[in-house]
Image 1 (cartoon, helix red, strand yellow):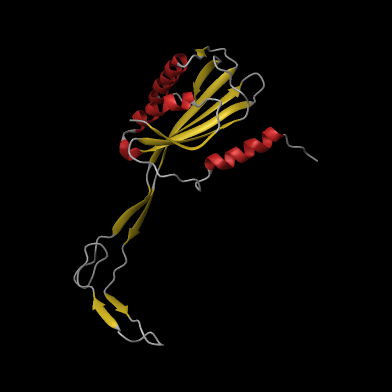
Image 2 (tube, one colour):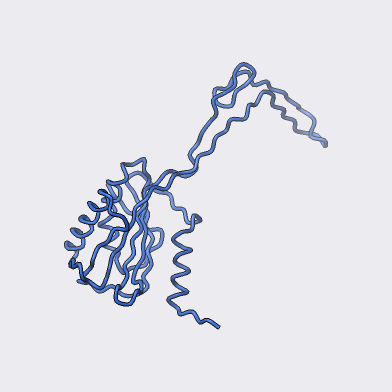
Length: 205
């Protein structure tokens, strides 16, 4: 029978935790949301190699931002460091709901044992969204989940492949462009290295 270490169990729980859409915290303008989990200690003053998972121009600029903030927080940068910070950025498209059912006749009855007293009938002559007798309507679209820009960060030990820390942070795209949002999130992410936080909301502008 295969045995699972406590770290394997924690890793599985974290993967479910970080990928779950069930955790939803309202974010206001100028705010971002962060979650992270610590597997092993990351000592202050550690040396890091920063590695984007793709070398797009935006991510290479973000790599420099990570290195700048890490240096400012007392960490050092070394291409041969045992601890590797990997990151990737991505868009998460929001969800929208459209109401386009044409409502021409509405019935309403209440009161009495059969619910038939005070019956009313109403014709919907014109409605710009749903449509009526005299128009088709254009539909009504509402945002149920806003589009977001997200960054995922991990710290792994290249000598043994073990993970020390994992985090993600996201902010609504309506606040700014993706590159500016992620750059604004870097200081908070670096400041939480080695910590476990859940549904942490912080200011980015």
